[in-house]
Every structure is written in C-alpha cells, then in structure tokens.
Length: 521
Image (tube, rainbow, N blue to C red; front, side, top):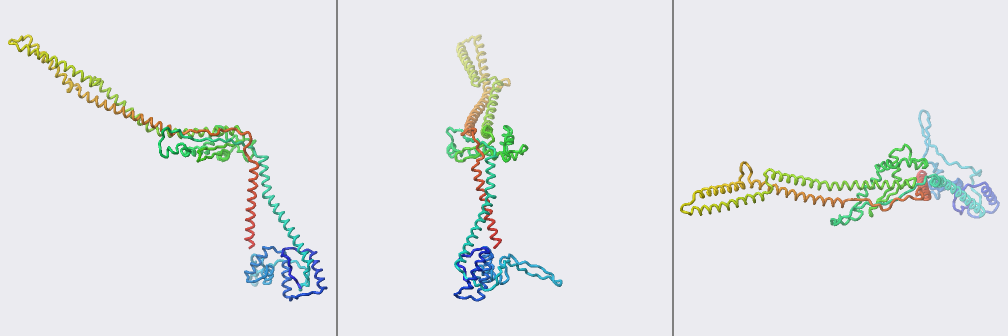
C-alpha cells in the first residue's frame, strides 16, 4: 500500500541515504502486518510514475507549462505531475518548444519523421512493480528535513548569486565613481553673482498698464532674457577666450583628463565646456539674473564673472542707445528742417531790406507822411498869403508870382511823395510793394520761428522719453572668490551614482525576468 505524503511538494534530489532509508522501510513493511485498503496495480503504477516524475526535480515554471500543454491537448490532469504523466503517455514532451522534423530520403522520395525528445531519467534499479513501502513518521520527517536543507541550500546559492551581481553591476561601478570624485577629480571653484536690469524712473509717467508695471520685473523681462541669451552664446565665449584665455585655463595639465579641455580643442568643444562651467538663470517673478562661473582657480572664476558682467553692461547700453537713437532721430530731423527753413526766411527778409534800402516799412512810411504833412502845411500858408495879396485892388506882382511858383512847387513835391507811396519812380518799387513783400517775408519768418520752437519742444519731449527708456544694470551680489572648492560634490555625486546604477540594474533584472517568462511560456 502506498500512502500519499502529507508534506508540501518541493523539488528535491534524493540522496543515497534517503534511498537506503526508504529501502529499509520497505523491508520492514514486508515483515510486518499491513492493514488498510489495497490499491490495484494500475493505480499503484500511476502513483509510482508520479513519484518518479517528482524525483526529477522539475521547477514550478515547468510544472505550470506542463499543465497548460495538457489542457491544450484536451487532457484533465489532477495535478501538475499527473499532467506530465499523461502527456508522456501520449508521446508528447511538455518541455519541447517545437517538434523537430528530420528529412530522410527513401527510394527517391523524402519522408519527414518527427523526433520526440523526452527528458532522460536516472534509473533507480527498482522494478516497476507495486510498491510495498509504508509511509512511516520517521521517513516523512527525514524527507521534510531533506526538503528544508535543500531549500536553505538553494536560498544560499541564489543569495550568493544576487550579491555577486550586485557587487559587479552596482557596488563596483559606485566604488569607481567615488574613487574618481574623492581622489582624482580636480577641485573647481564656483563664484556666484546676481544682477538686475532696471528701467529709469519715469517722473510723471504715463498711466495705464505701462505705468502699472513700470517698476516691476515685467517691464524689463525682454531685456533680461536678451542679456541671458547673449551671455550663453558663442559670441560671449569667444570674447571671454580672447580677453582672458578661457581655453588656455581649462587646458592646463593639473586638471584631470575628464574635465580637461584638449590643447587643440575646437570652438564647439570649448562652447560645450562653457555651457557646463557658466550657469545663468533668470527669475521672471523678481527679474533677477543669477550667474555662477566655475573655474579651477578662485581668482580666475572672479575674473570671468566680472568680465561677463561687463559684457552684459555693454549689451544693455547697446540696446538702450539704439532705442534712444531711434526715438530721437525723428524729432531731431524735424527740428533741423524747421531751423533751416527759419534761417532761409530770415535771409529772405534781409535780402529784401538790402534790395529796397528799407530797414522798416513803417519807418519809411512815417518819414514820407511827415514830409507830405510839412509840405502841405507850408503850401496852405502860402495859399493864405496869396489870397491875402490878391485881396488888394492892385496886388504886388513881384510878390504874387514867386508865391504862386512856390505853391506849385510844393504841390508837385507833395504829389511826388505821394507817388512814392503807391507808385515807383525812376523804375524803383513803391513803398506799398516793398511793404507787402517785407510783410510776407516777416510773416514767413515768424511762422518758421514758431515751427522751430515747436520742433525744439518736441525734441525736448523726445529726449525725456528716451531718458525714461534707458536701462542700466544694477549689481545685487558681487562676485567673491571662494576659499573652499565648490565642485565636485563628492558624497552627493557618489550617492547619485549608486542610485543610478541600482535603478539600471533593477530595470534590467525586471526586463530579463519578463522576457524569460514570455519565452518559456
């Protein structure tokens, strides 16, 4: 009679001592009196086959695959081992991925023969007969102890393999990285500085959103971003290399090979190193530009920081000067044109005065009018005298005739003077013509003068607006040389390397286990 074991099923390899104990148990069972139900030969053979399969030491994955294959073939096994037994009874190897076809020529024709490969078992030297062993408590205890020892041995082996893989893929690379940071890496010194680009205060500035955000970082955000982009550009790197030897500093022999720049390095390689050694960030909420310059010497890092700050100031001045020039150009052109036209009008007035020999039309008209009035007064006196002489019965002709001639002469003089006011004499222009021309010239001169004054006011306004648009760089944190090395951060970098290698190993292990599961299934 065979009793099913009550212990859990484990994959073990039975040793010789276990076989000996089983044989002795079988011998004792043959000598004693056996009680209970007796199984038939077919059931005994089935259980013997299952025991033989259990002795093969199959893994859990192989047992699950065998059950899936049995279900695929329409079998109904009671256990994983029974699934293997039934598949082998049908001539199917549950662990073979595909049947191998071998072509054998026969009589000029080819025939395919399927070769079934079954797992090889080690013969135990016992006949395939119904077992007479009795499952005693001592045998079960020995089997459980053997199973526990096998599990412990497998666990120790797997733990050893895991530790060896961790040592090779994680700990060893971490130790190499830590050795580099602690013993080989050249210390670098970082100099930090902060500056802000501000806008000139606008006295009585315009209202609206422009006046609302005028004192915040939003008013100069574009300028700050432009300065940041310039400091991170190749132009700034080339200018720093030309002025202070950026390439030569990082090509020194005392710098380790990983951080050192080659002597014949190209500008692209130098620019990549420049991007790693010059870190510039911009805070849009406060409008502050933060800069950190790293070099192998603290004084050199301070020199580089001051040089980059001066480059930023030049860039700000360049942008603001162009803006001021654009704003002042139109106002200056209008003022220059008004000034030229005013001078031309003044020259026209001067030319008319010289041509007509008239300094002022009003004075000239006043002089002529005075002469006419004086002549007319004298003429009136002479006419009264003539009337008085002619009132006599016998007037004195010696006095009358000269008096009449004098009255006529004064009348002719008055007519001539009046003609000078409205009509020219001897081809000369009249005072009225000269007065009209001078009045037009004077009005033109006054108009041009007023336009020039307005242009001057516009230019002053444009100058004020241009001054309000002026940007200047204000240094918040000055660069100070550090007394200790800032980089590399040895402990932090070593821990980071450990986490990176551990994560990579974990990802590779998960990927390998998933792929192995997919391939075997």
